[in-house]
Image (cartoon, rainbow, N blue to C red):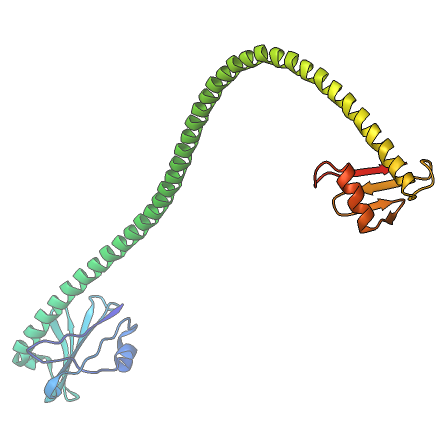
Length: 277
């Protein structure tokens, strides 16, 4: 597997923009590619290909000249400058450059490993946070539901206590009513006896009133016949007399006749007399 490592430092200012098409054809698969451009035309790009054993590292570095370096286990296998391949016995001339590149590759590998490990930890933490958030939501929902049940139970308890208190008051009130009823029952017999006496007296008054009404009716009929308003008693089918009018057999009588009968037969302004056979 080929890995591409791009580094920017104070030594070379930035990385080179580079296309891996040719390199991929030479070495196999290309998994990652990182490119960057620095100041003053300086670039560097580092790539690794794990399809070789041992893994090969390819470096492209530009600083006035373009360097192409192939390394394995810290040793230079190939070195080209501006497209010109150099013999192996001249590689030592470029040892300072190779050393800086090797050190940078080591640092980049270590940093990449730390970044990968941190990414794994971050992912695992994110999963834990998500699981915890889900648990917290479920617990919060259970807490809300329990709180609602507690409130409802408290309301039921309060209602039940109120009912018990009301029932106790009703029982107390009923006892007082029973006691009072016994007193009322005792006095009711007295009132019934008194009522019987009043009823007897009322019956006497009613009998007298009936006699008076009969006498008044007889006098009223006699007056009607005497005034020529009806020929005889049998001819009187209906009659109504109040403070406003006098109607005999469906016929309204004159104001004079009305006044005469009203003054004589009505005891109060709001009284009236009606008769229908």
